[in-house]
Amino acid sequence: MADVTETALAGRSEPDRAVRQVPSGIAAVLAEPSVRFGGLLVLAVVAAALLAPLVALWLGHGPTEQFSDIALSEDGLPIGPGWAFPLGADGDGRDVLVRTLYGARISLLVSIPATTLAMVVGTSIGLIAGYFGGLADRVISQGIDVALSFPFVVTALSLLALNRGANGQPIADPVLVVVLIIALFSWTYFARLTRGLVLSLRHSPFVEAAQTLGASRRRILIREILPNVAPVALVYWAVQLPNNIVAEATLSFLGVGIQPPTASWGNMIADAQRSSLYQLQPWFLLGPSIALFLTVVGFNTLSAGLRNVLDPHRR
Image 1 (cartoon, helix red, strand yellow):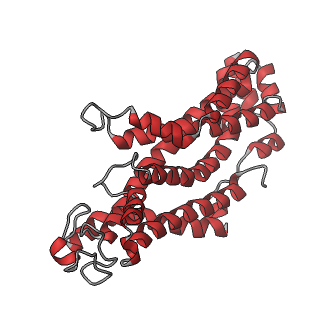
Image 2: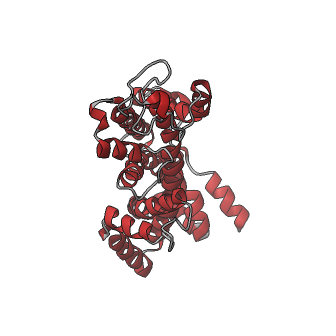
Image 3: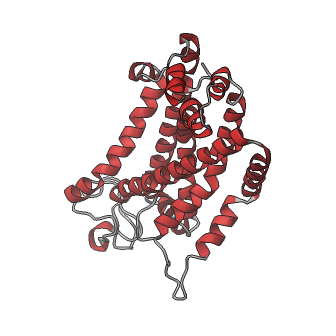
């Protein structure tokens, strides 16, 4: 019977196969202007993150090294851009350019794993809720609604506070904790999206044909429904990623995310705002702010282009 099922499913008519096929060829993706522009910005951010150690070696400035004798004036104020410090220094005599480049590494190190984890968890839960329906769907949908009711900042502050030991030091790696917290608040969006797609797909002709031929539920979910859901989930991954970059920057700005002296765009912006030294040395604030802005624009533009190419509803 299994062989018959495989043969029958493999021999499905070309129209059905054409409906389910996603035109995700490299040429089709690269032909989209938004993909090219957003991709260039994203590649620039990734290159900056990868080349950060080389730039630090070339300038001779580590991300946490302080050069009070040459980076601060006689009045203790940070110097502006120059050959030695291309974007000037901060209030502690550290190189703003080097710290901005290392901040890109932190943003990508946090946002990419967090968004990927949220996509895997949310898509899996959405598949179960949408396909099985009934009690499972009601319980999962209620759980999603409860999870969405928690305010992100307040809940994140509470969870991060629990990561403090008696001596005030973090119990677990702050980067790992921030990744888990962001994923905890992101999976619900993937779950809702996937559930809605599965509800519309589970009564499709190709799914009913697979059921008639005796395919197992596991096979139907993995071989029939998931390939139709995956492209949309991947597009939404690119949509959610810049939101999670901003979320990490927000937590670091509030002083509960990535802790100084580790360079993060959020804590760099917070440091500039607290000291008000950006009024004398604007790149103290502009460096991480522009980097954050360009990164979010790049991923948003890339996701918009991918949505135009891969999302069957858009097409």
